[in-house]
Image 1: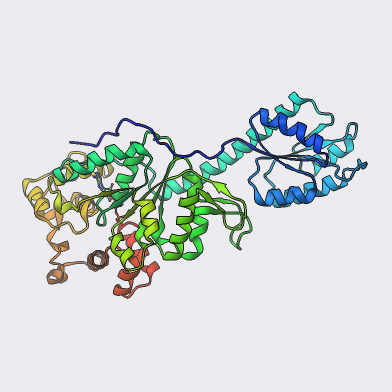
Image 2: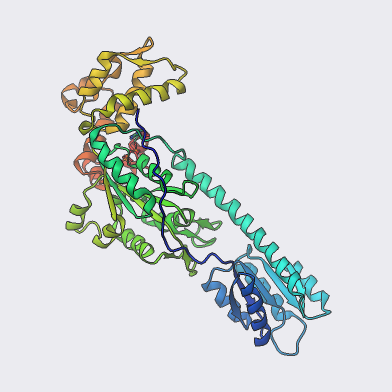
Length: 475
Ligand SMILES: Nc1ncnc2c1ncn2[C@@H]1O[C@H](COP(=O)(O)OP(=O)(O)OP(=O)(O)O)[C@@H](O)[C@H]1O
């Protein structure tokens, strides 16, 4: 049994965004700002500055900030700290999770106490002690990172659960797959964007996960999203995230798939079904590496490798004005074509044995084997649903088989074959429905909108049924 072994990593040169922690320092005195700027820059911070409360708010609107160090007094010769406390309240309204450290005039402990009550995390008195200031800022940053990390993990977990999570093995022995295998071994470590094409169920997602494993950064994120199945309303929030309050249901901040995949691979499945308006938004992010979460004007920078998949002919879609040519060129730096299963029949015994062993373990029947007749039936069948159909056929056969041997009859292949309509009366209602959906998707090259129209269904109703039958896509 041949399993493609992940290639030796070369390098993955992609521009890394500035990863220094970003601190905003606010004080109305230019010399104080300058002294802090030098100190903090030397300690590894990217330093932003503001000289007034309005300047602080504008900066927070526009920039991503990890920690705010702010003075409490902004009008010369006052030490009440009133403007500072008001500013603190505004900042908390904008971003309650932002750590704020306040600077107070020497001896004004009441101001510091009030600021802590108002939500500041810590305080320093002027003139400050450099070591103490740097230590307490570092503590705040670490806390902030830990909180962010746990939130991110929470969302990653939900995402991985949604998209399968585990990395399946990629079995390939046939001659047709040898060329694919050589190409993928060469390009996986390069960091180049890859477009995987192939009919439904040929293994595009497994291939994408395999590329990730062979990329040289297997511990980096792999985030899968059905990019062709997102409605206009959720597209931006799913890919770019949103901030609390951006729309009625946005109860908390949400990190988008691009940010979740930062430093790793974003797998955009069903890319051929993406509407033109969404293609334009996606292209902009791929060109600039910058995005805005919905409801925020702050720019976030990401470094993401995109692996996209489609069963449609994208050149044809470009010619017909349904797909942007500039986006296609961004995505298909390398194109990997997965042949349909009928063109690589040598892989069938290998795949069938693998699925039988896997399902056997799952159903507590580990000793199951295929009869010679079953193998012949598998080899002569057309496999319009490709490897996924083979997987389902083996699972069903295992459940049908009475002994330890799966027979040709257990496979029920003729009933679900391409000559379907003449055998309609032998099929169950569900088999007919599945068959018609497969046919429509094949006929319209995976275009869900067209297939739905032909079947007399809404797009979302078709997605629901695809999900039910394990025809990949629906979310
Ligand atoms: N070479 C392979 N080795 C092992 N399992 C495979 C292989 N190819 C496909 N599979 C299995 O077949 C099923 C379908 O594969 P996958 O979801 O990757 O196909 P796809 O081309 O992405 O489908 P779709 O076009 O519907 O999105 C999965 O359960 C996968 O694990």
